[in-house]
Amino acid sequence: MSRKQLRLYFLPLTAYTLLAIWMTWPLAARLGTEIPVGLGGDAWAHQWTFWWVKRALSQGLNPYYTDLLFYPDGASLIFHNFAWVNIAIWLPLQALFGNLAAYGLTYILLFALNGCALYWLLYDWTGSLPAALVGGTVHATWPYLLSQTGHPNMITVMWIPLAILFMRRTFETQRTRDALLTALFLALTGFSRWQLLISGGLAFGIYVIYALISHPVYRTRRVFGRMALIGGVTLLLLAPLGSSVISGLLQPELRADIGVDESLNGSDLLAYLAPNANSWLGAFFVEKLPYRVRFTRDQVDFVGWVTLGLALWGAWRRWRQARLWVIMAGIYWLLALGPDLLLGNAKYVQVPMPYRLVQDFFAIQIIRDAHRFNAFLALPIAMLCGL
Image (cartoon, rainbow, N blue to C red; front, side, top):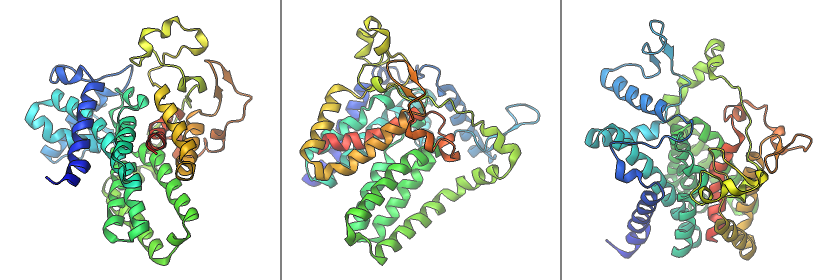
């Protein structure tokens, strides 16, 4: 193996796999007997879904309908939350290690891939191995994603950094191969979870718009042709699974099953600075803190003091390179705060929040909880840490 291959593949895959095992410990020691469940999440629903997809594929059944629910009438699963990427990883693993062990291995692997994706993006962006390692570590250990044990498809955020990586190469080289890989990673985001295609697609869109504005050389007919190719191939790849969803949206009786009754739970402004009771650091002393800075919700908004310091240092030291990521981080942060300002466990509805401008859009409504934008806040913060 060449030195370049060691830097690009062996080092990040090994480092972030070990890091993921450590951050999810003692899961690796209990494979086959326990799975990550979380506080009120959907882990058991995903267990059923994995089992159902395996049965449907092996028996030639339609995975989007089952009579095992609401028997004998059955139920449409068009709008069920299929984590297709997780399922694709789990299927061969369960054949080797069994259901529960495969579920745990998939969970660990996703965090490792999150780290690798950001490592590859930062290494391509800066050419610096230490910078790539730092950024990848932040992305692999993002507290919000680590708190999503009950929503395993919420942590599958590695595809957007890779889509940005190959979109950047498409701008610079205009090669068809890079455009096709960009489309593939965008489609994989949708296969992971449709909601992620919306929230993660925002980061991709911000990058594309910023690149076109800041680099006039990119605004050529050939580049726009490659962008059209990316859009067309992405839609083509998503069509087999997306067509069923679209057909369901056109049927009022099925669309009602989506149940868009958004709680609009946003993040508390102070929660980004104060450890959460469900984080390893906060578990030691959160109960002793005053109520205004005591956060016990199952999602961890706390960024981490070291991470925040590195991001601010990167933004100040490399401002020209950092502007894109500062803008992206600001947009995601404002959206994650939700429609009403939460400050120290108190709600201030009189404060106008940017989220109110977009909260009535259907695409935003199906994300349901505003704090879910924190999943992709990891991308710009990790990039800033590595600059």
